[in-house]
Amino acid sequence: MTEKSHPNGGAWRNFYGRVHGKTMNRAQIERLENNLADLSPGPITHKENPDRKMLNLEARFDGRPVWLEVGFGGGEHLIHMAKTYPDVAIIGAEPFVNGVAMLLGKIEAEGVENIAVHPGDARDLMDVLPDGSIQKAFLNYPDPWPKARHHRRRFVTQEHLVPLARVMARGAEFRVSTDIEDYVRQTLEEVPLAGFELISGPDRQPWGDWISTRYEKKALREGRVPHYLTYRAP
Ligand SMILES: C[S@@+](CC[C@H](N)C(=O)[O-])C[C@H]1O[C@@H](n2cnc3c(N)ncnc32)[C@H](O)[C@@H]1O
Image (cartoon, rainbow, N blue to C red):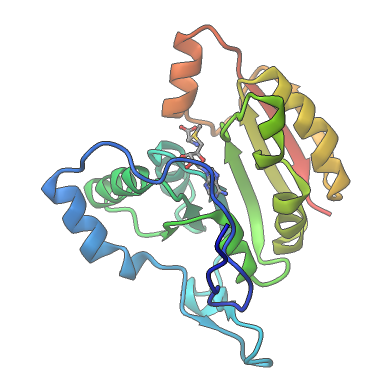
């Protein structure tokens, strides 16, 4: 592994998922080139301590509550939540460029204005989020990594959950959905170790404001059963 320098002083991590998919069309490439800068959750600053660079969410989002969606895929849930809760700002993190391009198309088509996009690994975003700054977080159908030797790549590991606990406000809701039984097992084991308290689930019924994502539709077509879990942040 080669370690590249990180803008916040740390090291880039290995990301094992897909970053590129099939060829994008002209409009998608143009949106990626032209629209991403305005949708950034940045700039990164830290008033009191210039060595500890942080996003200034209050300035960026006019003091609105800020939510986080990890791995938004094609952005169906992210767009739906942003439209359902116009007074909230939602930051989506997704390293898969084709997914980001799909979201940008939806943002343009729907005229949604309360979304920010981090086109990369959620760990790099969490590094620059202030403590207690996220009021709700969503992890929908995270990559299953079915082989036992790959389970440590799953999002529900301390490497991801400890920073998530830090950036979430006390008592804030953390929602997890998955169609993989063994992912439920690991979620039930690992998420409480980072201090989260299970308040509901694994449930078979989704949340009242849920919208089915692309990945969930595929899981249902293939006969897998969705599980929904709700936690409270420490
Ligand atoms: C199985 S897909 C599900 C996508 C979408 N949430 C859905 O339900 O259709 C998992 C997504 O998580 C993204 N992902 C994996 N690790 C991530 C990370 N560390 N930070 C942000 N996104 C991540 C992947 O790129 C992928 O798009």
